[in-house]
Length: 435
Image 1: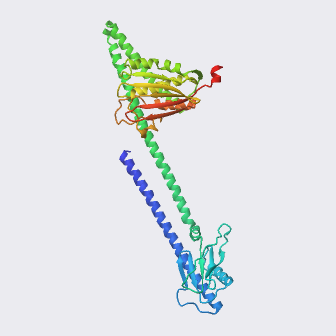
Image 2 (image 1 turned 90 degrees about the vertical axis):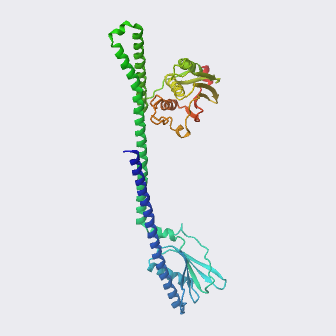
């Protein structure tokens, strides 16, 4: 599947989901509006019947117009031409709302013309709902237009209407589950696509890593196959040396792949021992320092400088894996440098830790890639160029060694200003040092 096709399918899927969500929201809103309209009609008819019954009870006639006035969706004023008895009103309200299937909690109040205030009546429910957590006493505003009137307020109207829309709530929940599943699927697809790209990049890098030594060995073997080569012992020894070196190079590459397999199975076993970090660094980097000084690494002449200032440098670690860790960091510093490499190794005490730092003058790493450099197979994108050798496993191995020792590692880098890797290594306490 091409990149454009993949992107088109993703965009089409997202548009479809967004369209379904908008449609669902539209119909839920329409259903709610219809439910509210039906409710308002039932309340209006019920209140008209209540007003008629009160008028009959008081033997008075109703006003000619505007008996029931809807002030808002949850607040109604009913105009009566006579005094209203609270007990009679409550009885009629309950009966009529039950009759017209108005299943919502409500409260009512009656205007008292003597005090010119609204007298709160009661909080009622026409259903079997528990009122303990819902009861409230609202401020019922008065209305200056009428002399005798009562008001009805539905304080939880939105909640009550929504509770009667179970099918829409259920369908919305199903849609939400579908969206979450779709989002997870998209995440998995993107992850698989990224892994496929990483795998492709790994294969390309591995091919380039193996092609050069294989080609060199093949050429050397052809030369050694010439019977006349025996007459030139120096050339013979030179080609034998080339084959040995390239064979070792292939062996190292295979070891790296096998090392990756062990990391996959979490088989990184540590054989810890106590040793002086400063002496270890000098021994582990002696060969590297000599080669970089003589320009035998990446054909670049550079320098390795030590600033070993830690006063207590005794640590407990696996020498073999720590050696590989140091080599991988130094190797990266040399590879990713466009000028003469200048590498600094620094140690200093930080509380109970020794801060071991590797600083170089390389090309640096963009901020957006810094969180991913420890990922397996990851290499900072360089397009189709493969001028830097490697599989993208070095820093992943470094991270694995650090985690296996339960140390900490961090990176500071700016493009064009090189990289600085900091390792926090617990130092052996003085009681152990003296024992």
